[in-house]
Image 1 (cartoon, rainbow, N blue to C red):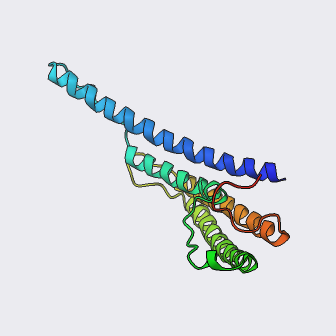
Image 2 (cartoon, rainbow, N blue to C red; image 1 turned 45 degrees about the horizontal axis):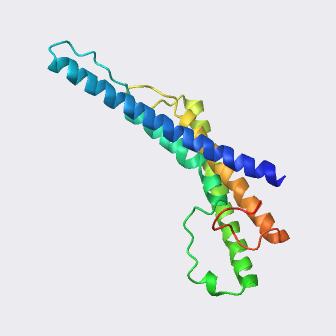
Length: 179
């Protein structure tokens, strides 16, 4: 089960990375298209008008997906900012108690956000909401990425909670996970 969950978190991280790569590719193509157009005009030819319509909007949707799909992976890798100024000076049992309490609060907040995001995506689907940019995108599509990322994070938080309670881990990961 541990290997399956770690693979699940890595898959979310990979999806996040792929979306960041897609943003980079779109921006590079846009810049190269503009440079080629300028060179053609400079040489006296007509510009080809190479332009990716709605690039900023599509990049924003990919950034939304990259952010939310990467949450669980980042959490389990210990990459989220964690204030340990007080906790690091407590004895290990008190640290575990604080970690359990923190994970429970984070799971509750994440469950609330996932639930409400799911309703938002459903409403967008039900009403047929479209983005207002150059390329009309059904809003439920990027919103679904947000919902899935939050559910992914909720699974990671519940995994951390049960791992803390059962003693499989002593504290929330702050570096690489124990395999």
